[in-house]
Amino acid sequence: MQRANPTEGKYILRIIIGKLRLGFGDQFLLEAFSIAFLGDKKYLGKIKESYSVCTDIGELAEAFAEYGCKALGNFSIELGRPIKLMLAQRVENFEELEERVLGKKAAEEKYDGEWVQIHINGNEIQAFSRRLENITSQYPDLIEAIRNSVLVNKIVLDGEIVAYIEGKKRNEKMEEFYSFQKLMQRRRKYKIGKYMELCPVAIFFFDILYLEGKILMKKSYPMRRTLLEKYVKESGVVHLARRIVTENLEEIEDFFNEALEKRLEGIIIKAMNNTSIY
Image (tube, rainbow, N blue to C red):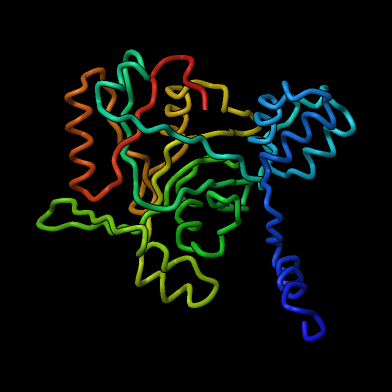
């Protein structure tokens, strides 16, 4: 570093910490793969589907370089390698829901926390963040609670970690959700034990993507939710995302207002039909 000029020093450090930031991202590379290895940009959609399952972009490039179009659709979920998360779209009003989601709808609470994907492979449990970083070491209390609540050996779950306290007052259940800013106290390498006490957390699971060797991403949301309820046992730390299922917009609006009163971000609406894949 002493021998490097300021510009050289900047890139030396970026190489060391793995954040070179050359000005283009993964989507740029996927477009390049489509042209370089498959000969046409028309394959980009299928390549993005493959990337949502195989998020190791080096492994993806190697497969396309060797097998070309034959590699499309042949990627599987691998425990310990996170999957790209499903994103939602905003609506301007409740009436717009009728245009977007026909028929019966599930309205789930949307929590103000950190999205997490949990991979369980026997005794090994790993937690991955929205950026696909391994954050297992930051939540040892949560990992132990999950170990006692999940009833199968191989599974991938989507959930939200929140700063949360549950208790009882005059024999009534009391709960309190705290802000995302408070939760960020847990994003640390040191003094983890101290901050486990200062900032207790819970996890609310809302989806299941993989179960005992079977990929569930192409299965319907109602089927995935049924499996989620079957294989995740709730506790004071591990929960399922709370929801209502209805066609009534007034009920959905009431549920939304209740979520805001609890200091949640809002609600997520999911279709209850057979085409509601991940």
